Amino acid sequence: MKFRKIVAAAAGIALSLSLAACSGGGAGTSTSTTSATGGETSAAATEGGRVGVAMPTQTSERWIADGNAVKQQLEDAGFTVDLQYANDDIPTQGQQIDQMITQGANVLIVAAIDGTALATQLETAASQGIKVIAYDRLIRDSKNVDFYVSFDNFKVGVAQGSSLLNGLGILDADGNDTGEKGPFNVELFAGSPDDNNATFFWEGAMSVLQPYIDSGVLVVPSTQTEFDQAAILRWQQETAQKRMEDLLTANYQGDTKLDGVLSPYDGLSRGIITALQNNGYSGTIGDGFPVVTGQDAEIASVKLIQDGVQFSTIFKDTRTLAEQAVTAAKDLLAGNDPEANNTTDYDNGVKVVPSYLLDVVTVTADNITEALVDTGYWTQDQIDAGVA
Image 1 (tube, rainbow, N blue to C red):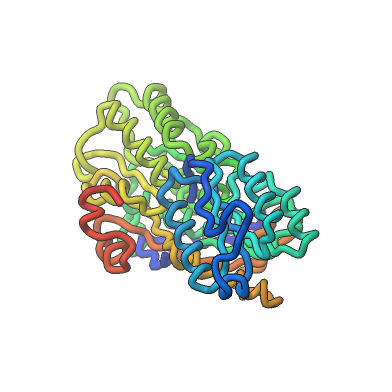
Image 2: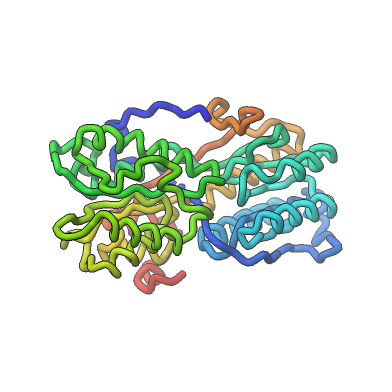
């Protein structure tokens, strides 16, 4: 994987990186606009073509929002849409994509559960002239990926690492080093090893954090500083909670206290926070509760940020990602190459996949209203309730 080199000092929290994985569990269900036999819904849809949309799970509200946004915008553009969720089960997703191909999809938009597990389906699609768009998660080990739409996942990691440093007081709100020497005890979590994005998140975060680990400003008492040690398979909240509990038991006895946690996803963050609360950490960040990062602006975590329990999340506006997927689908069906703004970094092991990457916003208690309420992503009532 080719990674861009980003200078940590340029990565500050004031990231206006705008609008970002990840993860979840699910409910192998379909919200297809057609019957099982695939009847078209309108003349306009017939003219637009048929699009199969394969999403990984419905237990993460992020993926529900993605599925709904892609479906709605495709239908508004005149496409027939077959939207399927796979319960985070790899064989189920493969079967769903096989069915989409059989039922005559012209384009597939796929958010893969395991980015290495779809080569056979993509080979079949290519043999029938079906175009494939990898959605947010890069599909690996196949030449038959025509385009990739996602957020700038390295910058997501940079934003997460910078946010942890900001919460600890090592960086100020503009991303400048404050001269704070610590030392601060931190632990590191990474995403699912079968999700290509997780590596980008990790590399981006570590590009910011590693210099402070090397200088001793940050200390990792567990010494678990490698991706494989920190990874949480399938982004499972319960797995993250168990790992945090084990880390606390093994490394935080007596006067040793945890100051911060790098978490790449809100679901993991909530598991981590539960483990902390179960092990005697209480109150809010200003009262000594550890700084915990996140991603996806899930409503339960936004509530925790508002309440001062979680420090930050990375906001990825699924509406803009859906727009880009629809634009790419239109271009591919018209026989055109979609506009790419990155043609170097997303090597799937067989080819460099042309990509369109969106930026992200770091959300803290200071900018919840501006980033999430004023943009119409969540209402203040939803945030206050912690329920969408």
